[in-house]
Image (tube, rainbow, N blue to C red; front, side):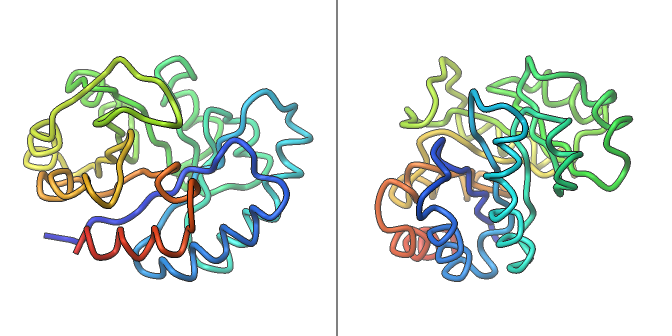
Amino acid sequence: MPDCQLYLISPLDVGGDFPQRLDRALVAGEGLVTAFQFRVKGLDQHEAARLAQPLLEICQARDVAFIVNDDVALARRLKADGVHLGQGDGDVREAREELGREMQIGVTCHASRHLAMEAGEAGADYVAFGAFFPSETKASEHRPEPELLEFWSDLFEIPCVAIGGITPGNCRPLVEAGADFLAVSHAVWGGDEVVAIEAFRKATR
């Protein structure tokens, strides 16, 4: 059983000292943190690209995949490693056409086996299920059970990401159910990121 890895999601504010915080988190999370999602809202693409650039460079230096949330055009502009699509953010096949074969495409599938299978058939590189717990970052009425991760990992090769209110204290059932990645935001950025990463390392091994 491969170890479960961390997929960090940015806070909405990535200015100020956030680049330094990201670098500290990635150093502490070496071998554990394998992806970082750039998730900002309501900025024009020029401003988003300006904020993303230093974070992209930090991720590249630490060999961590840089994923853009919801924005295929920005992912292409930045030459990011991937894009993450919500259910209303466009079609996997169209994104693939625009971004080429090398770019990772992930899809939010809430609590739905059906949506996940559709995403897999359309060529998604990973599927995300959640929210497993109430989230500080994003409201969700979908509340899957850990069995969904078990079902998916038993049947499909495509990696699955668990998301939503995940902390070092509650993540163990998701790891044991077969989550390939835990997507975390507030649990890391809401306090000392290095302490949080170390706590996740203990909880996921």
